Length: 288
Image (cartoon, rainbow, N blue to C red):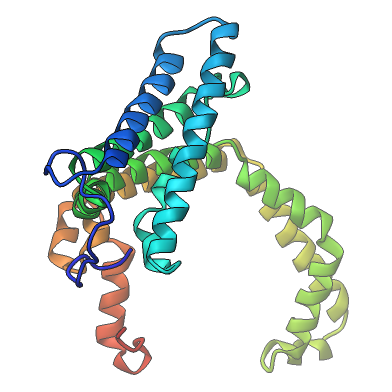
């Protein structure tokens, strides 16, 4: 979005309130109010299907007029991209969403109703008023909704993760690739400079296979034990609560480690910073 601190081009229409208006300003203002009324009536009035078709015809005609006005104003700006960047929301206000097939999508209708209200306000107090208002309020709005949205998404992700059975899936994968894994482990044991010397012992191959098979069997039994399921569930749940608490406190938005003390456990960020202090040669380069 262009910076409003830059020089602002003179407006092609100043609205109907300032007083310096022409007849076409009043016409476009009336049409903008009419478009809001038509969509609002469809959204909240629940008209019959026959009436909706008449409203759709009128709304389509109004949208066509606004499309022509938009193209005319854009041409006056020399088809500049900046005009499109400032007035992009008007394109959505030109969609004739009063079509009976779209009435069921009430959320979309409500959003486009707000866009049409913004267009009507522009026609009242001057071009780009809605753009300036949105530009000024966008950061506070984003900051206000970012945290609850993040927490809601986090909760949904954790709910999805909790539907899995990770120990059992891991055990199934190990069983399916048991032969390959045994061959890899045997190969690595043979190549190890210390353990590789054991191959001179009698029955070396049988001993290695027996150890590997026993390790696999014990590991699979551990993974399939119900107590391991409880352990994994507890890990997921504890991480969810910790991350949720961290987001609520806004710890993900600051690099100050002092705030990490508000949590019951040490965060991975604190551990990583401590590692970097103890191993400066391996620390990543600072950004920027």
